[in-house]
Image (cartoon, rainbow, N blue to C red; front, side, top):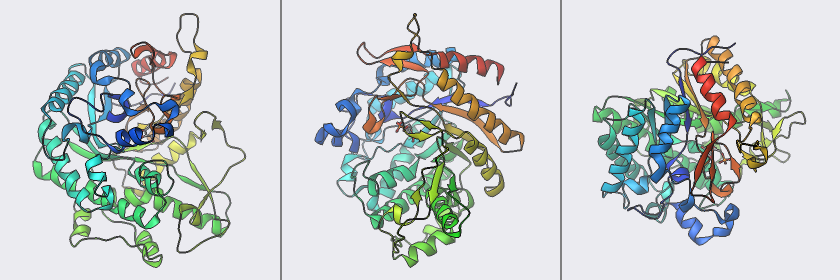
Length: 457
Ligand code: BGP
């Protein structure tokens, strides 16, 4: 039996654009996702777009009852910037009423809301001006953040600024997965820098507001593991960690962008445009806590043909296909529970053991209805095994002193997944798109309930 601490947060995570639906109505303006879908629906799995997500906009009261029924004591979702401030400064009263009631209902059911401000959903009006490429985005985001703090600050005690900020940088400007889907390393660096500054401006606004509560950031941490102990593979591993993890972890927790990263960008001629006072802003606004999303490790090797200055990520490090890896074939991600222990240890040893929680962990599987039993319940034992294995490793990290205060899975009800639509399902509840988004609990949901009741298994 492994037992987790009392007051441990048990819950699930989601985001506004992936669950709410109603993305082109109720006063909301388009995000890049809404517009990209309108322009290129064929890019999206089965042409499933952001308008048709799980209809949480209407169904949140029943979903929250389901959360309470499973014993969740916390839930993370996001506010849609484009719903709250459709043009960037005018408040949409219908959005205020919706979010206030959503968050109040969560609290009334004993489910603490953890509220995030940006989950890949850049407003289209701002994207037309260059999005995170322009310094204007930093002020626009801090205006939005400040508005949210004042409108909902009496209901929320845990805020986060960004979910996985490295993803919109890499996916949008290096890998072609998110709008604008270009490959331009210079722009990627500038977008990254402005995102970072937007985070810090929002934290500064939060501190200035005097609102009670804590503020953090949610980062996807895929620890890098080198193919071999050769100097070039180890160098690739260090650069991978520097770019994908430390680029945000160090400034957000330690108050400084790593010197090694600054030097690397200088030598490559990739230094972003900055403003006087930026360094001080970073230094003075550390986060109170971290949310860390862990799905998979990052296996790396030295590039076959190193290229400096780099034009793409693979000029810096290449992904290594480890022959012994276990894989989730639906999502194509390696399953490596030990990684969560390494993350726990890293936070303890390198980030002064700041309070943190697992803000996402989970397994996306396609065609889950084939695993339904005679009653129709999906027997997702693979998901239970996945959670157990990760919880064992997390427990080990906590036993050795890592300051982890919770575990959230991705996700509660099946949700829409960007370009993959509803192909891979992650939820404790199946969502039947053909029958009014009807929810039905999976075996993993019942297992999670029992596990929460016992504080372990
Ligand atoms: C995380 C994102 C989520 C979610 C999840 C599952 O990186 O924060 O938004 O989508 O991954 O990934 P996917 O939906 O791509 O299968």
